Length: 72
Image (cartoon, rainbow, N blue to C red):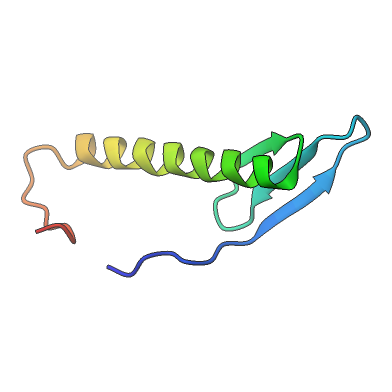
């Protein structure tokens, strides 16, 4: 499996000075930060949580089935 090395984050600065961002390719990944660096760190964490949640859901759906992953 190929690693994802590039995603698009749409960033806006709110009226109260916070940076708010959303990953275009993972629309559920939304976060904020007081700096762009903090926002990007937070959005990476959000994306990881979403990926882990999806893995858990898929594991439940595929329980008892023979499934091959890139780790095999």
